[in-house]
Length: 271
Image 1 (cartoon, rainbow, N blue to C red):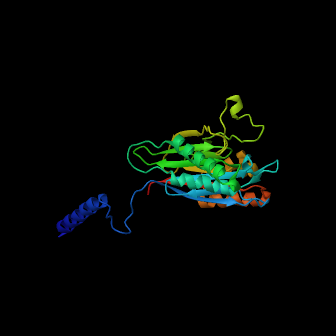
Image 2: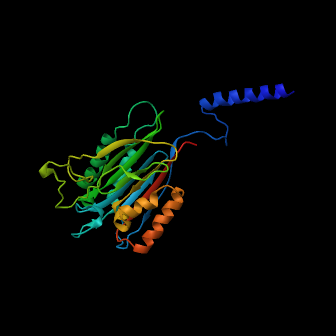
Image 3: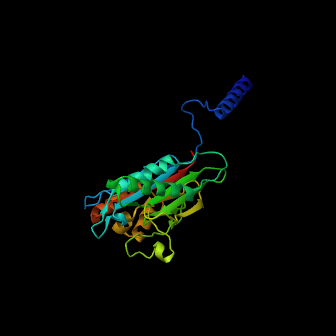
């Protein structure tokens, strides 16, 4: 009798495995699916000029901080933060998103260039959008046999990799753009803002991921509010992404940042 029961169970599991491969896995049955388990939020700046936006999908996360008049982050010179620039950038990110699957490597530089062209086109064809500029921090999970994170970065935000049980490490370098910025085309250096000039040189890269690793994207408003050192302490391991975000926002409430401050925290999970 025991033998018969075991035989029946084995046959059922075999059928489930075959059907699972064909996409008819029984409802409610756990499925292994590498993804980014993420939470995010924008702490609204006290100056009342929205500039930030973000998008979270299963394997894609992006943040943007927009401005009008050629200066990012809504600072100085009468130039204002403008969330419409960020919205245009993120809309282009989603529209140009590559297909998942297959063996073809995601072209992060080409993706960022497509977003750049969309922001420039919006500014050129709509007088109300003249002078729009945006930062961009974009990550996508490449869940192949050796999972990795691919990223593209433009502007003064930041992407951090927080390996499980290790200290967070920055993946990107912040490049603010101002009228007196050294990062201008006149001296041969690349522009660092979407929508500024025809040429763009985004920072792109790849980092290997292990289950439990954390990735954090923040706009410059968050760095200015709490400082890079304190942000590193708050993001290092420990609580869930949601609890970690609550802790960051609690500290922001104590300093009342003037500019929008966006934080997205994602854990790499495989179940």
